[in-house]
Image (cartoon, rainbow, N blue to C red):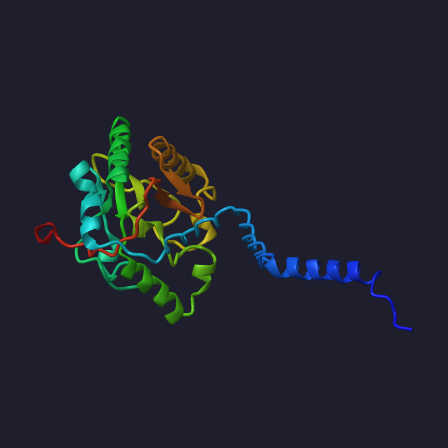
Amino acid sequence: MPLSAGPRAPLVGALLVFTLAGACAPPLTPVAAPAPQPAAAPAPTAAAPAPVPPPASPDVVMPDAVAESLLVDVQRVDSTIRVDVRYATPYNFVGEVLPGYDAPRVLLRREAAAALGRVQAALQAEGLGLKVFDGYRPVRATAAMVAWTHRVQREDLLRDGYIAERSRHNLGLAVDLTLVDLATGRERKMGTAFDTFSRAAHTANATGEAAVNRQRLVRAMSAEGFTNLPEEWWHFSYDVPDPLRFDLVIRPVRDQ
């Protein structure tokens, strides 16, 4: 007996309608993937500190033009100051004229020279005055002193501080001197000679008249801002804000 087609007709029609509807639907539009987010900027950091420049080398020597503008002859400040520049003669511990001393003149930084003039003026009221053995010293002269210590095997003078490889004399800020009678120029008793390399030359190591004279010199110099080197009664230094090193040759006035 043939099967009946009645119940299957509605199902076939429904499938046909669904198929046709799918065929007529618009195509699916692809959805773009979300764009990647940029990475967060790193948090700002503190700027690196600027490098600190190294200090000026103590070996730097200023041009002669600078030295000529800053150094002055002490006798132009006060002509009554006596000078006896030993390093411009053979009569010193090296036994020869030191390089750079072409004339027996004493130069100092202007500030130190002015202060020395005030010391001279104060001492004159007591019938006293100054005699200067050395002031500004060219770097080449200091080098010659150091070379001498090695040549004669007296390196102990470097170790004990009697001779300095870098001297304040090179700055025009140290002066070696003594007291004299103003009228006669005769040196006052100080217990030792200038450039005596021994404990006897220490400022405090004196008695009697020599002790009195040393202390008088220290008081006069200290009153105008000079500082005594305890190991040398004759050596005094002066401070300025801008110490500079020089190697200017000390020449006669006519050559300046």
